Amino acid sequence: MKNYHIYVLYGLVAVLFGLVVFYRNKPTEHVPYQKSAEAQIGPQPSSAGPRVKIFDLPEKLDFAGEMVPLKEMDIKERLEREIYVNVYWESNMLLMMKRAGKFLPTIEKILVEHGIPDDFKYVAMIESGLMNVVSPAGARGFWQFMEGTAKDYGLEVNKEVDERYHFEKATVAACKYLKKSYARFGKWTNVAASYNMGQAGLSRRINDQHQPNYYDLLLNEETSRYMFRILAFKIVFENPKKYGFELSKDDLYRLPELRTLGIKNSVKDLADWAIKHGSNYKELKTYNPWLRRSELTVRKGNEYFVQLPVE
Image (cartoon, rainbow, N blue to C red; front, side, top):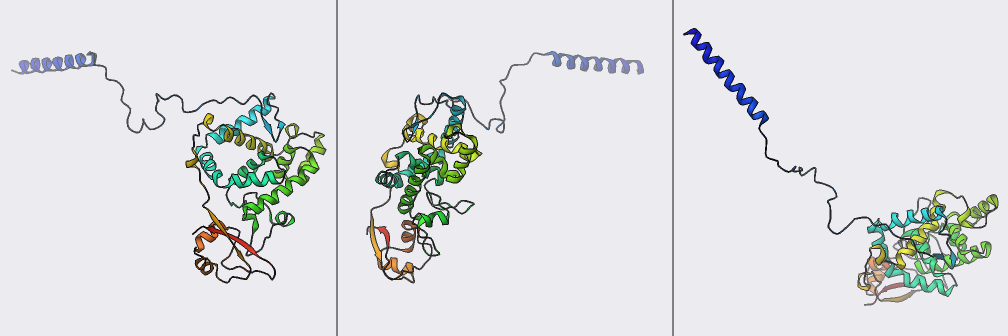
């Protein structure tokens, strides 16, 4: 009996061993690899084509009638950098185009009236995004004036009134600055560059490097990119569909029809004043951001003009 049990045990072991070998070597049906949900996160192939396009530069390009030396590889590379950075920051460019519908017509009109090339509207765009922003250095408004410079060019700046936020008056002040700069440099490209680094700063670089042209100067990072950012905006705004921006007139933001009211006497409560004139404090501050407080002191013989939506 003992020997019989041993034979049975050996037999079972042999059968189990055979089954293990069989299933190890058995060919398995091929199942396509299935990614987990986590692995599938990310860009997926699209039948619509590549997400990123390569754009051809225009054959010719000018700023305010002054030609850009596109045949120089350094110039081409710097320009392409700003085109791709801004075109593929789609939300910023899209909102800039929509916002331009509110303000560019007035800015363009003021530039023409003061003999400033139309291309300088792009300076306001890259300075502020056509918003009343404040820089870390304290420059304010569409044209980013510092307080001292604003006063030098006729803008009122105090605790109650800051006309750097008055985009029409600030545009007039910018025109005065640009004219003075052109009298100094004689080239609109240099004028635009000086708006970023200052007239004295650009003059020093020109004198130190013995080069009168912006494109031949070695400048700080911000100013060396400055003109190319302007040019990138010009290229995209003049050819929006080429860069994927297809907006109709109805897509653009617009100012409402506004009425102008004069204020000849001091107002202690602008909220109450606005209500008495068929509006409210929110609208008063929205369309007159240069009013910085809830009251307004009017000196004898002076008058302020505010704009409110037509009732």
